[in-house]
Image 1 (cartoon, rainbow over the protein chains, first blue to last red):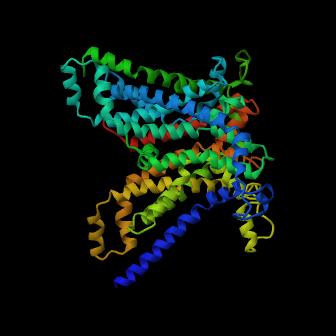
Image 2: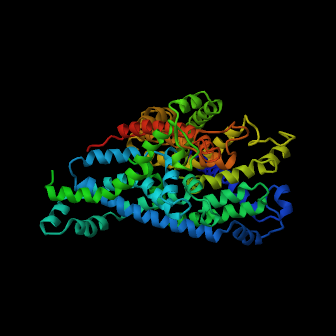
Image 3: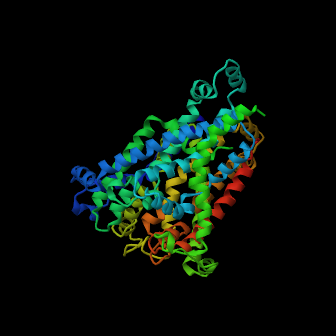
Amino acid sequence: MKNKKIVKNIIKSISIYLLGIVFLIPIFWVFSLSLRSKKDALTAMFFTKDIHLENYVKAWKTFGFSELYINSIIVTLISVFITIVIASLAAYSFSRLRYKGSNIVFYMILLGMMIPPAAVIIPLFVMMENLKLYNTLFSLILSYIAFGLPIATLILRGFFMSIPPELVEAARIDGSSEIGTFFRIIIPLSKPAISTVVIFLFMQNWNEFLLALVLLRDKFLYTLPVGVANFVGQWDSPWELVAAGVIIASVPVFLLYLFLQDQFVKGLTAGAVKG
Amino acid sequence: MLNKRLQRIGFCFSLPTILFFVCFISIPIIFTLFLTFVSWQGYDLAQIKLVGIKNFIDVFTDKIMLKSFINTLIFVIFTTFFLNVLGFFGAMVIDQKIPGTKFLKNAVFLPVLLSPIIIGIMWSRMLDAFGILNKFLQAIHLTELPILFLGSSKLAIYTVIAATIWQFAGYDMLLYYAGIQGIPGELLEAARIDGANEKGVIFKIIIPVLSPVITITLLLNIIGGFKVFDIVYVMTKGGPNHSSDVLATYLFQQAFRLNNMGFASVIAFCIVILSLIAAIVRLNITKENF
């Protein structure tokens, strides 16, 4: 009876590993493609003996990854940082500094959470053009802040509500200013919630495509997704370089995930939080 | 209620968020509504011409619009169905205490981390006439000529759907996994002692207990499906001959390739309405105490 169970579990375990490997075939295949010669790229099925690591150097140059990475890092870091600051102030006000009408304001902002960029892309484009912000990274940063605020406010407000109100009241009685209480008590207690929001916003802004595609015209301003899509859009672009580019664009996020697994899982599934 | 001074400070704290929201979301939505009534190329604001409800008539009698809407529905239905089924059973598999489950969990979650652009590029190459799938199918003699997964007007949208399911199965799986872990072990054990078989345990206990998780996951998938753009744009650009266009790709094409801002705004307005419905449903489901 016991032996039977062990055998059953071994078979199960092997099938689970196999399932995982089969699932990852697309990634293995792209990796194999990225190492091939121009000739093998279209003919071979999987790995070849002829390994061409220099594809990566070529891909880095032809895609212009240095610029793509710099632009993506600038846009993502600045927008995530400002979103967190503004959203946590608002979340504090919606939880512990409620004013007449603040619930209605909060509810309106939550409705905005579901508005996708596509719904307002035309007016945003027109606005940015008329403000002379079209074709600048600044226009992207502003838009990313606006689209990140609702969910960030929702998650942070939920967390601030769980902080005992007595802490805030005691600080008030001790004569601490509201902004002082916010920075000295609320923020230090909220590190887990803030890191969740940071990862959620980081992934959203790092991968965002439509706004970047519409609001940027010059190649040297492109962020990673637009830059990669643009290069691949030219149909004569060589497969082995496209594959190397795909790997170059993916590896940093994989590495981050490796070090921050739990935070990533929490951050990415934060979209499913209850109000 | 707090005193007047604290209320004022509270208002100031929320002011930057309100301003961003008004400038970049509320005003644009109103502007979109205004643009649905005009004919405009999109450059010179002085050239805006009011045309009444002409754009609405044009859009709702447009065959490609109908096709895009149906494709969006097909996309939403297929991705939502398969993501939930695969996510649920994936979660049941990784919930067991045997070696390999951690590997499977990470493997399936990996594509969730990537941008749909990257996934689209990978899958376009993989399913190309020279890609690995056609080579494999030819090697085992299932087909002699390569199948044009993206070049066929019948298959294109389903190919994009398949790539999307591959990308996000891990997301649904983790949501269900978190839900399953929240079920008390005694509940399942008691049922098994009472002689319930696995099927009974799944349908009579796990699924009913998970119903809040199921609702939110379904809703997130539906909302995500209605706004799909990236992966369609990068895999097919809506083609061949509009056969895989969805609302967002058709909107993009009308607005930024053909410069029909009025026509495109009607499509955008449809997206606004769909999103607001989704938002209200979602807020009612996850209702909270203000």
